[in-house]
Length: 119
Image 1 (cartoon, rainbow, N blue to C red):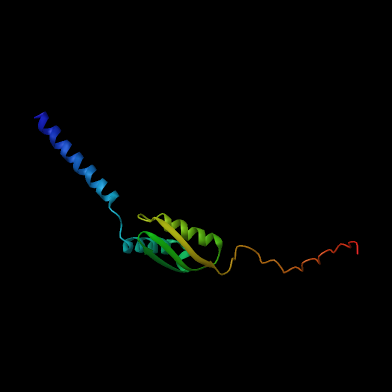
Image 2 (tube, rainbow, N blue to C red):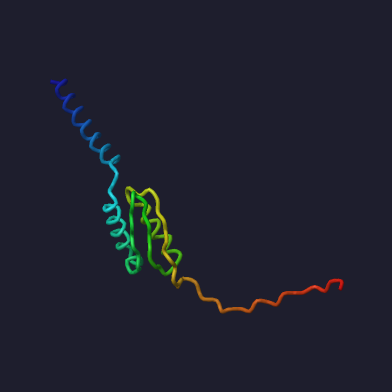
């Protein structure tokens, strides 16, 4: 009876571990990766209001669009990189205005100092 129980438990354990191993090694298709990244970006309160396109080919993610700050650009890249199956993120997001930094008034550059040489 104990042998039978041991065999049953062994078979269940193997099936469970084998199933997990297959899931981890199975590459995700680009469509699934794209969808996961789009959902993740939309769940972010700030990034969901930005114009960000996600293109995935062979596990390489390209982020295209506009954000308002460098922090948003970095955050979008970090979220994309965290998706399962992503091999690389190419961040082509453009920062169109950084509202987190005050705009400094333009200052005139000082005139260059000219030395008088022998002459």
